[in-house]
Length: 437
Image (tube, rainbow, N blue to C red; front, side, top):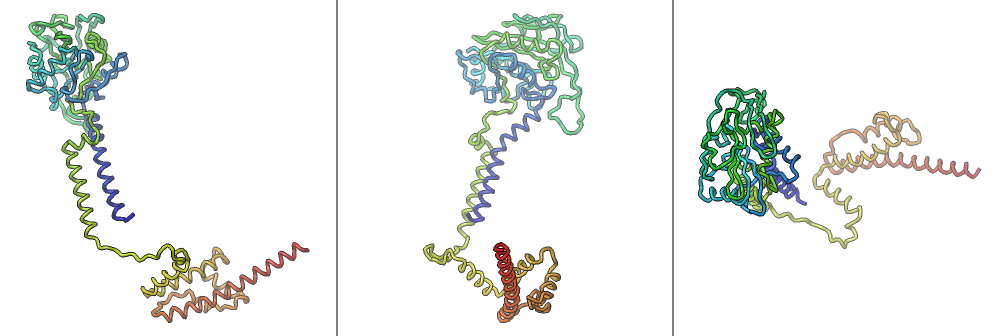
């Protein structure tokens, strides 16, 4: 495979890999940075509530990560839908959207809206949520602040199966901010605002819980086959507060009074979209940018290939006998050195073979010591000067110099090799004679 094609495929794979991982990394960043969603593990998130219902309910409890327009109003499949501090993406002014939200309730779905008075930048304020609910469902909700002080309440509840007597809230050491920061950030007091409904707000509905002074805290409105439940103090159900007083029993009481075959927690309005497949990602702005980048890379690669010179390769037919012989390799190597006139490199190739022969005979010795051993051996009949001349580093300026030095090398190498062969023959005869004796 050509090198240019390999590099192109590697680049293409990297671009595609980052493009596919982009939605996954975006979601992981959104989950780790979220503060007040059903996926958040911060003290102000509601993942503990989500996991609590998953553990205690026998019915399926899952996340709804699509637009509410994708949720069909089916009387045969009613659902309980929790909206925990929903984002701005839930509230629209269109008539079709308002009609759809009302039909969801009329066809049997139970909607639970849990909000509070502390509003983040990506969250709808309490007043805007109340205004949207009044518009969608024809309600007359109005909120105000609780008379008196303190967030540890004694309450009266009117749930059919549970009795809630008190709610408790304790300030978390981590203040409610837009995002968690790796360094301390100045922030305002994280104490929430306790909200109550007016008595007129309960018209047409039921009071599920109120203060000891008779101020409504949770209202439920039957509409068609379903209902709408509104709780303006969702902070009692947060991760950092769910295990205090009767906060967890309150959550279960809200679920039981709005019982349905399945339970959903809406998180789409907070930026969590389930459609993270590659084709859907291509429809987004980042996906379109990725697609354009891939097309430009492909066009650039094609232009590069077109303007590359055509290379001719001379090959031997596979039916030629020489195609698989060693002579072809030797001839090609010789032609290379002849054409480049690099006589010294070719000579070093030949010397390296003789050097390996000496290393086998005198292992672990330096070259100078090896040459002295060869010169002292009378059977070799080789002088020390001739040996040093073979390994001397000198420039070979012509082909005749190369041939002369090669002849001297081959002569010395022949003497050493001939003596080794004779030694091996004598050793073999001696061994045979010993066996015969």
